[in-house]
View 1 (cartoon, rainbow, N blue to C red):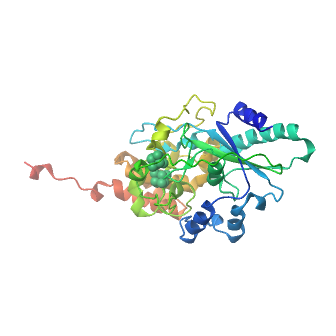
View 2: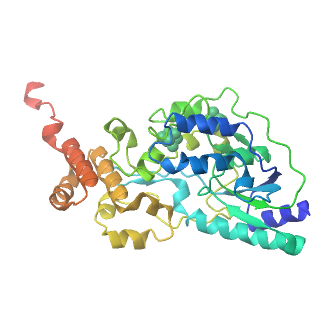
View 3: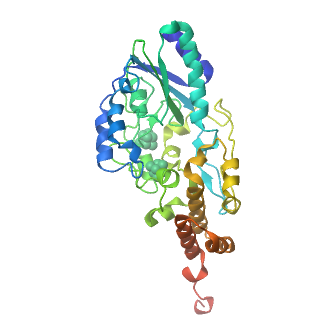
Length: 353
Ligand code: SF4
Ligand code: SF4
C-alpha cells in the first residue's frame, strides 16, 4: 500500500513523499525558544498558547493520527534581471497560490488512499496555515535536512518546495529520518542575506527578514532595512538563490509546477498606479494578495525611493497629496526625500576643475 500511495503522489507531480509518526522531534523546543525571543515579529498567531502546544504532535490536530505523510511539490527559483524602474517578486509567488493548487493535489491523493483503505480512513490535509512544524516532519520523513537558511533542503531539488502533510489514522511503517547535514561548512546563505536575519541555530529572525517585512508586516518597514530592500516588492529569495543545492536543482521553469502567472519584474510606476480593485483583480488567486494593497504600495514606494530614478518624483508627489494610509504616506515621503536632488546634492563641476 505504501508503494501505491507513493506512486500516486509522484504521478500527481509531488517530487518526494515520506512517512513518519505524529510526534515531532527536537525542533519543537527550538520553535518555542524562537517565539520566546520574539523572532516571529508581528506574526503573533505563531506564538498563541493555544496553537503553540498543538505543534508538539499531529495528534493535537487529528487525535486518531497514526501517520503523517509528508509531501514536497516543486517551484522554480528564478533570479530575473530587473531594470531600475522595475520591482522584483519572490519566485514562489509567481505561480497560482499554492494553498489552492497543492491542497487540491493532496486531496486527490487522499481520494486514492481512501480507495486503498476504504471507509475506515480518517484524513486531514495541512499546509503552512496550520499549526504544524512542517519542516521538522519533512526531515523526520526523510525528505531532506533543515539548512542554515532554516528551509528544508532536498538533496536533489533544493529548497524551492511547497510542503504539505496528510494526517491519517492508519499506521504505516515510517521512513528513516534524514540525518546527513548537507550544509557542512557552507555559509553562503548567511553571507548573502542582505539584512543578516539568519540566526546561528538555523532559524530566521523575522524582525530582520525582508520576506516577512514585505509580506506579513502590516506596519512601516524599519528604516535600517529599506536600502537593503532594493527593488524587492514582495518577498526575498536571496538565501535560496545563494544555496548550491538550488543551483543544481532539477526544478526549472518548464517543470510540472507550471509557468509564472504574473510578471516577476513589474514596472514600479504602473503597479503603484493600480487602484485597490485593479490590485485584487490582477493578483487574483496569487500569493501577492497576502501583502494587501497598502503593504504592496508601501513596498513599491520604498523600491522607487531606492531606484535613484528622479523620474518617479512627479508620481510620488501626486500620491503624497492624496494617500490616505499613514504607513504608505510615510514610505512615499521617505522615497521623495531619497530621490530629491536637494537630499542628494551633486558636487558642483565648476569647483572640480
Ligand atoms: S529571505 Fe532574504 S532577508 Fe530573509 S533570511 Fe533569506 S536572504 Fe535574509
Ligand atoms: S547556502 Fe549552504 S549553508 Fe545555506 S542552506 Fe544552502 S547549503 Fe546550507
